[in-house]
Length: 208
Image 1 (cartoon, rainbow, N blue to C red):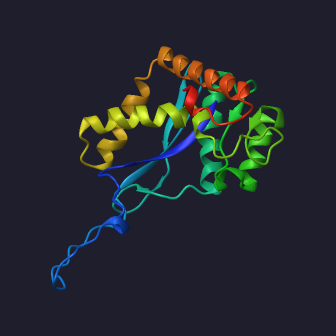
Image 2: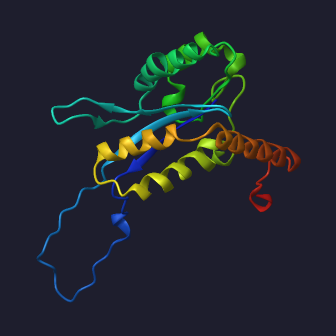
């Protein structure tokens, strides 16, 4: 099961460092905009047969749920209360191989202890484990090279106007991904693995 997190922005993200105003006089009109667009942070885990998720990293507030930063403690809570029960319900916790990339929250002590308890070192592919996921290798993770791009293309096509609509659209479109589509994505991942092996671990962009 490949896993990953992604940000879905409501209005897009603008790099203000690349915005310049050239004028003969100092402008006296100030236009204040948020530093960052409103967003949700989503986690998903996918196999060739099903997707677990989406899970949104957020905390309650007086105004409603607020997107929060992914920390080791929050990730451990998500795994313990959401992912592991899902795998147990499917009856495959003891056979699932769990993959995650090298993001700092993924190697927090509490996260590593929980993963070892339920997957053992033999069924974990991650940094700081005997089987390490290659660093800086998004082209090998179907979540990176397919899932997030696919979801964003159709979610933003819904013309969502607020975070509730954005979350609902993500939920709906994740649920609508068919097993045939998942199998196709994983077959493409296997093709990438084979090409990588044939090229001695070098870049494979020229072959894709």
